[in-house]
Length: 187
Image 1 (tube, one colour):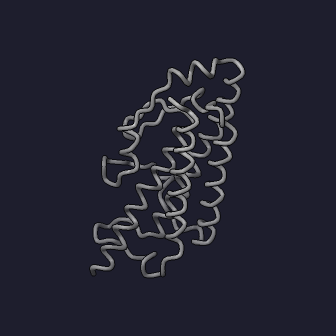
Image 2: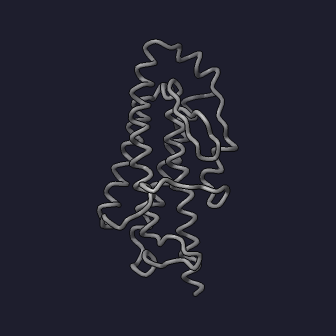
Image 3: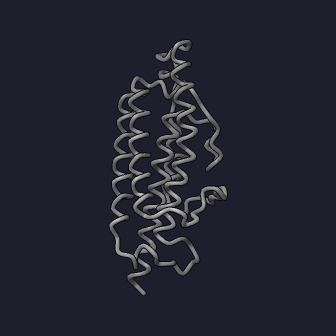
């Protein structure tokens, strides 16, 4: 696998996902607060959930990146990259809204404690954090440390994959926000 192309793919996905998420903050109040008929979250609640999920994933990404960089001093990076394979099928489903049942922890549920402006600023900071971790591990060091991810039976995933997961999670909710808006327009 060409690790540099892979890292660039993650960068591009992050950029697209975060730009799309950012665009939702400019929607009118009616769109932001519309409660879908299925009892799901409003766009504003989804945006808060994206922030919260990113917050907790970034804790794992930070720890993982430090351990990956430490491992780069002892492990054969070139060999690890050669033996690396990406589980594309299971990963891509993470970005598909409704592709599988997803039970999130309570601490990732929106509580309405932050303003939209604050959430937007925090999500922007989270985007730059992700890019900084990719810069730090620019030679593929992210493959040198894995942590278990229970969602969609992904199992042990490396630090770069955690960052990609974060971006796919946002993509999943972009679809959900679009569904809310479409339903609102029909009604």
